Image (cartoon, rainbow, N blue to C red; front, side, top):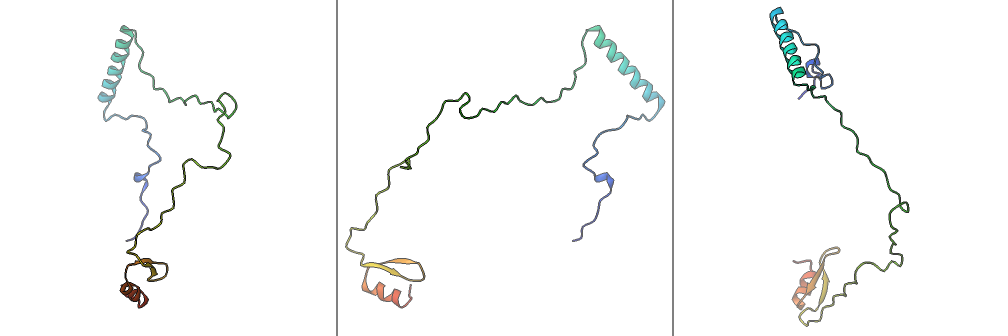
Length: 123
């Protein structure tokens, strides 16, 4: 697939509309008449056309620690936030030990056959 340049009709930068053009002089006169009638109607009811307002930025005043916020003490003794989990130990009698099948793969050994199989690299 090849890439190529597109013409100016595909531009995303110039989206403002230019001055409105009319097909005929009659269409221009009709538009001017409608605009005049609309302005008369607005003045009759003493209203103004809605003005487009730009969005104003929110008023944001940064607050710095110690200015007007209460001081929150930090935990300094490094004791943590929760109790330590007890260490798990196997207390049963079925497992003989732990064998290493391949690299760091620890496998529980339950019989002497399992130990021999793992020594021979059998699964």
